[in-house]
Amino acid sequence: MSPSLSGKVAIVTGSSRSIGAAIAKRLASFGANVVINYVSNASAAQAVADDINKQGAGKAIIVKADVGSLAENKHLVEETLRQFGRIDIVVLNAGIMENKKLQDVTEADFDKHYNTNVRGPLFLVQTVVPHLKAGSRVIFFSTSLTRASIVPPDYLLYASTKGAVEQFSRILAKDLGASGITVNTVSPGPIDTDLFRQGKTEQQINFFKGLHPQKRLGTAEEVSNVVSFLVSEEASWVNGQTILINGVGPWGFAWRTQLTDLFSGIRRMMGSQSRGAHDLL
Image (cartoon, rainbow, N blue to C red; front, side, top):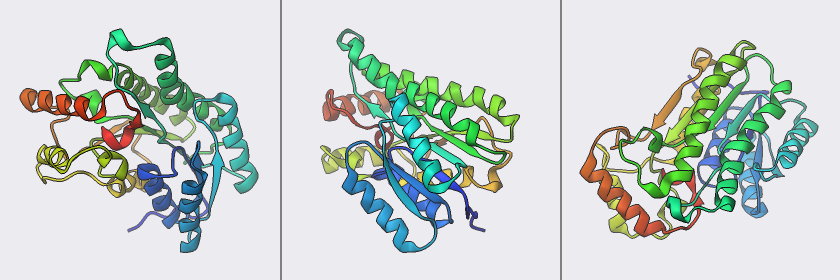
């Protein structure tokens, strides 16, 4: 049975492309009205909204807001309430990742990661909670790296921000759970999106595929399937959980040789570039 989200209103941060867009479309297909949040690419966000509105189920609007800014988070909430009158679901998908070792990390790097990945989600939840009723849902995003036995040193900032997010979820599940609001976290592994494939050879893509029993990557739709369950009535007794969406690859297991090779390859492919974190790990 497909979950019904008819009449619900969902904010999905970072939803102009990739996983965020897939989540927004999935929730709208079940009848939710969705806010497509973006920072810079208005045309991509509008394309997602247009696609949703053409389907005739849930409606979609776009709202520009940098989730690392408390003032813009407030604008995001206010605009959602102005347009739809309520908020029932918050999916905190937006995030950044840059790879730097300790000696290369600057205060600006630290602030950027923690503003976007930690500060922003926490204070967005704080801002939206007064408007949430019993039965509402909050979904944080982490990474399967937090369960990996080996994490390379240049994931210092990113992995630490996601560790913080998982603790937010665990503690807020008890706090907000008293009001009938569930809080969970999803932690994807490598996901097959354009962003993930950018800058990688087919050989490198195949290496990632080979780490999993099914010899493939996950899809944005498979992440959105889990999110749509967690925000539904069927998940009313799922609270305070971190759900791994990684195809049972090496994440969380001591496959030392494979992981060492994997992360060496990642460092070569990415250097110090910033990518869409949740599409990667």
